[in-house]
Image 1 (spheres, helix red, strand yellow):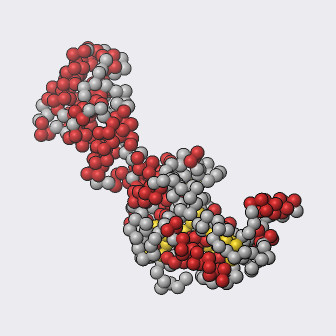
Image 2 (image 1 turned 90 degrees about the vertical axis):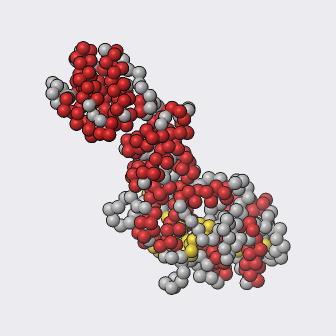
Length: 485
């Protein structure tokens, strides 16, 4: 490729209703390379397989990429100099190039019926040979009128050798070449033909795609050769492997539609970071990258050949790190969203108190939907309402109720002396710990202090809780504990 030629990449999904993270990663790498090189990234829809098309899928694809932060310079929603960007709207273009191949003697109408093709397959099988259509190529095919399949006439049968930017030199034997269908009897082109014409007309210079297309590359090359055009450069991406690394990731292995991750509270920049590191790395020790840092570090040369593993624990860790990078305002916004969607009545909580909980919640979640789980499980109830407590659980080990009551009374008087303006976690901790150090064991006061505030077996330390719920409510809860002892 001419180094001065502008880089043009594309992502060309089929509208089948599901955006697998493998597809999103393909888009991500093509987008990152275009952005890194100051080039153009195109979104194109390959909808020639009408039987598999799902209504609403194009909108779904656009929403998925937009959520991820993947933007395009040309596409079905924004147009561009090579419009239209939906294959079913480009049929005249495919017919134009089909006619060129016919005139060059490189394409012909397929006259055979399904029954005849079945006979040919059976004959090849009986002879112990793979079925190749070119072995049964008609001597005098009819003139193509658009109602029959149009096939490529492969004349130069040979071993095919090509270079892949990730895999290096690849090759395939003569059996990889055949007279493949270019345009079906319904008038729609096959993927094999349509994407080549689209890439040609749109000036695509680099193609990133799944490694499953390697076996089809000789067929693609035979079409490029027949059209007498130079192919784009290919970069075959390693597969995303299911946990355990023994097979490619599928729906049964926990892979979800990419927008499901959005609903679960994952951040798009975390998802981008996670997918980028499946089969690629920046070449240094960094594991957390912002989108800008990812683009800056990206290169096709750093894509790995071997498959990368899908690891939900790694995704959760990356997401948690990206949550920490958010501004306090963004953290509050996301937490409030999941919190308010889960509680029964808005009157049950104070927004101001919820804001004071943000640092505590951030330390305990991996994704924002965990907030909803915490609310549902009642893990945050004691921050908004006085908990139910039992006298037995107030006592620390062998401490008697009389002793516990005495300790709490002293603590209450100490805390009451703290002014409203000085009431915070650090001041409360100093007073409580100074008193705890005078007892045989700190737990004699710290245990009942924490339990009377939270009513929970496990909760944050009492200083944090008291700092959040305020002086009056802290003293009220201590008084309630004293009253039941």
